[in-house]
Amino acid sequence: MHLPWLFAARCSLLATRCSLLAALLLSSCASPYLSQRHFTNVVPQGAKTIAVIGDQQRTSWLEFWKESNTEHAQVVTNAMLKKPDALLLLGDHVFWSSSKGDWQFFDEIMQPVHDAGIPVFPLFGNHEYFGNQDVGLQNMQSRFAAARTTWYRWDADSVAYIMLNSNWHDIGEDSTLLQRSWFEDQLVACENDVTIRAIVVSSHHPPFTNSSVVSDDVRTRDEFVPLFVRTRKGQLWLSGHCHALEMFEQNGKRFIVSGGGGGPRQRLLTGIDARHADVFGSGPVRPLHSMLLLRVADSIQITVDSVATSAQ
Image (cartoon, rainbow, N blue to C red; front, side, top):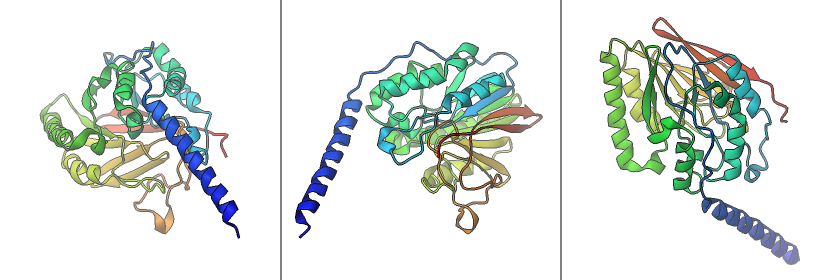
């Protein structure tokens, strides 16, 4: 008796899915949006303070059920008010890597960083592989001198920053194994280098998180973290992907998830539902934020600058 209504509903759902598919296909065929803003990878002499921002993507219309924040630019501005010597980005700079509009938005919110002339060191997040991957790579490399390779290392103030590409499926097994070998070599080199006093590792996907949306990245946790934990100089592991702020202590090492750059925030599992003990532990939804890193002797001092959001 309800067949006409059911048929109409199914047709409407099919039309919606076709519209979404068409939009995605058109976006995937986009040409690169080459930036006029280029961020150097040259660390200035005497650089000490490093700003950190993660997951700056704006909410896509495909995510109509999620919150849509408007404070992306404020997060960047607040970070620049601290006058950092460099900026580390934890990935997911845009929602769709081959979208001209998404990259235009990113360029606008990053204007204070460009004006400051400081180097920027980005990770490749999973959203950097959304859409046409070749176009996404061109969009990254046209902006960031550091993105000539998708995993790399840079040093500042006796600290080695090792930047991993944790998109294991997208880069393939051969590249994953090559990167793991490279990572192990870098850790050994840092341990033996008397000029390096601390190691900070960054991967977009977190080895540990209490997110209700994403889980621990198993390969990062099981294959890469043990190499880091064995080091003497390893101080900190930074990640994004979970749009929140978390800190865990494992085997004497700190693991921070900092995905507060403006992407729609994720609820965290708390209490008996939490997978890990969160040092920050301040409720299921965390504020948008940036962080500032400063080496003090052989340790890394961390401060967090929160930004209020108007999203409901």
